[in-house]
Each structure stands twice: as C-alpha cells, then as structure tokens.
Amino acid sequence: NALLELKDIAKVFYTDEVETHALSGVHFDIQRGEYISITGPSGCGKSTLLSILGLLDSPTSGSYRLNNVPVEDISAAERARIRNKEIGFIFQAFNLIGDLTVFENVELPLTYRDGVSKAERRDRVQEALERVGMAHRLKHYPSQLSGGQQQRVAVARALVGKPSLLLADEPTGNLDSKNGEAVMALLDELHKSGSTIAMVTHDPRYADFAQRKIFMFDGRVVDEETLHRLRKEE
Ligand code: ADP
Ligand code: ADP
Image: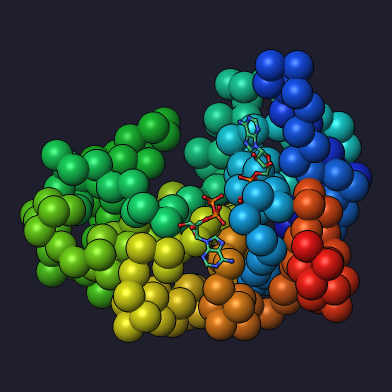
C-alpha cells in the first residue's frame, strides 16, 4: 500500500514576471518500505520535488496524499505539524547546529513535540545514536567530528522522531567516497529494517543502491532511455 501518492503535480515559481516551470505532470507513488532514488541534471527539479514530498512547500497544482491524507493545500501550520511527525530530513551540508552537542542536536526534533517526557527523549536519542554508531559521542560538538560522523549524527536526528518517510538530498555530496559509501550502507540498513526512503543524488553509483530509480529532466519524470537521449541532445 502506498505511503504517498502524487498525481499530476506542477510547481511554478514566479519571480520578476518570469515563470519557471520547476515541475510538470509529476505522477508516482511510493510504497511503504520502498527505497527510491531521484536523479537528473542540475536544475531539473529534484530539490523542488523533495521540498514538496517533505511538506516544506506546496505544489501549484496536482494532488499529494500522504498516509491517505490529502496534503496539497493544507495550511502552513498543519503542514508543519504533519512534517514534524512524518518526515525525517538528511541534507548534503548535514545542517547540524554548531553550538549544540550531538545529544542536543538529535534531541531537537523531539522538543517540538508534545507529550514526550525528558526521560523518553533521552532513551530515544540514545537509541537513534546507537543505530548510527555514534552513541559514544554524545557530548561532542559537530566541529569535533569528521564529515562522515556528522552525517551519521544527522541521520540519527532524522530517525529520532520515527518518521514514516526519510528524505535525503545529496546525502553524500560533501563526503569523500569512503564516508559516502558508509552513509549509503547506513541508508541500506535502515531500508532493510523497514524505513521508506527517497534520496536525491546526481551520482549514478549511489542511485544504484535504491530499489527503484526515478529519472527527471526539465521538471518531468522520464524513463532512463529518454533521459540519456535528452542529455545527448542538449
Ligand atoms: P541542489 O539543487 O540540491 O543544489 P544540484 O544538483 O544543483 O543540487 O547540485 C548539488 C551539487 O552537486 C552541487 O555542488 C553541484 O555542483 C553538483 N552537481 C550537480 N549535478 C552534477 C553532475 N551532473 N555532475 C557532477 N556534479 C554535479
Ligand atoms: P535541482 O534540485 O534538480 O537542481 P531545483 O528543484 O533546485 O533543481 O530547481 C528547478 C528549477 O526551479 C530551476 O530552474 C530553478 O532555478 C527553479 N527554482 C527553484 N527554486 C526556486 C525559487 N525559490 N524561485 C524561483 N525559481 C526556483
């Protein structure tokens, strides 16, 4: 059964009387427990799509159902509430807060939730950090960790709220290949233990880790052959 269903999604940005059609006719489902990658050239709409999937932005038209709930034109407050509960984000630049410890960074998403006691927060942070192999660094600050370690902490932060969907935007983009592969192995493990993951990457090697690959070109979802043909014509 589908965790999310996108039907005919379009996103248009209007800036200084210029219209940018960032997404057009985007139509696909993601099943519970699925791991998909989204690839395509720079500017093809990957980040815009991820922002819509993650309820950071809403589409100009089309429908989006998450857990069977229509979320395409709900209020910003309702979007934030559902986002906080259902979505975990992993970014290229890690986005940890420099003056918070590892523990505090991972705890942060839980502090926005009602009804999670301090003791429960502590247990869940501990558990999330154990899953990524960083439980021995609770009191460290991000600047005291390598890039690969920071990304593992960021993965723990994404997991701690037990989201139904993990979104990763170029999660290996700031890592060397050894650390990049370690983060991919971690995503693979999360997938095997039941997480639903959508990952944007421009690196075909990493896209191959996913169970299903989605290709984009100029705001549209295309098949792989079409993408190769269009890129040659550019
Ligand atoms: P975003 O929209 O998240 O910024 P981009 O795809 O525009 O993602 O770029 C992310 C990073 O990957 C940038 O540093 C960019 O220079 C690099 N990048 C994007 N596309 C390619 C590509 N085809 N080959 C190599 N590097 C790329
Ligand atoms: P990608 O992540 O594949 O590099 P993006 O989703 O970032 O692509 O961008 C898709 C298109 O939408 C690009 O033409 C980009 O310039 C445009 N775009 C993205 N965000 C905005 C915005 N906030 N305002 C105006 N145009 C935007």
